[in-house]
Image (cartoon, rainbow, N blue to C red; front, side, top):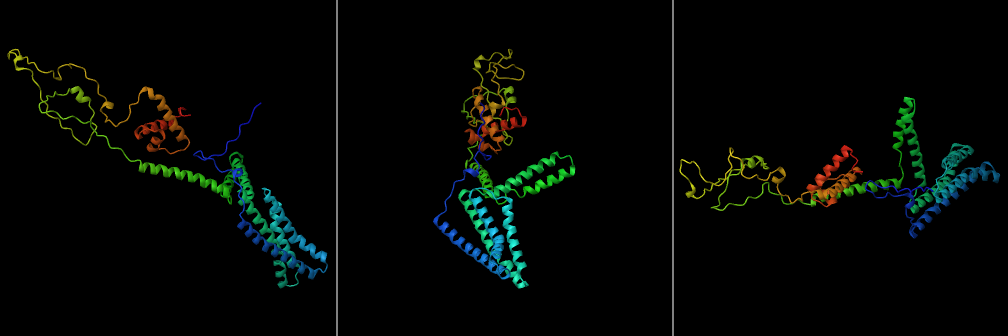
Length: 391
């Protein structure tokens, strides 16, 4: 039997879970809030009742029959009240109101005002008869709006906003697909323009979407500020000397002339300071060992001359041996696994969209900034080459 893995919650670019509508905690109204809501609802009910009674009186002057007058009031203000109650109940159940209910809350008050104006005998009565039904209609819609806001406050879910966003998202998906696959070029252009126009409306009035976007940007701002402060407060170590310190010579200590091969292979690391050759003295052996001038042989300490072969082969001096000692550990073959792991870690963070610098990479890996810089360069090279070693 195959099982379907559970869907993972949406996360931000930094791995933090985004707020979900079903995970919002339920908040209870305080006593003060409940009292204010009750006090605000009572005037709405009173105004609605007075508006219904006034409309009934206006219709009664034209239709003396009580049943006819009550029917007119029920068809206008009464129908609006029923739709408002349905709207409130659907909101309390966490459901969005159908389109007919929303349209009825706008159309029925207009019909009630038109009927009242039609029953009037002159223009003055027409204005009064048209305005009177609005009292009950506005009261019904006000109670429905307050009930909706109470549900949004307690549950954190705005069903109307979610309904609008879902509808706009569906239309954007449709127009995006039609702008790419429709055979008619004109239709493709119109759909592309319509999709961009709908993008302006998505998320309008959705407080939950706004809080989620603000949370993501807050994480990015926090990380950027942390990187900036870390770079400012980390400080710089003491600079290493450009040349290794040379011990001072004793007054009577003999020195030998450096071989030309070694002098030619030495790399001068300082371009601004000119090195001055120090005077060298050659140490002669005992004068008694000097033979007659006719022999033309003088016993001296071995000194390398361009025409003579080197007596001893010195150790080769490369660029790495002439670099200043910065306190960095020399990488050996034994640390290749650790090096690959560090490069893979930086590569993974770069592919996730993180902006790494030498200082942040050093803090992440626990190494010096120079080593972190080399690891960061290797990670970027692997991403650009697409070798797949960072997966």
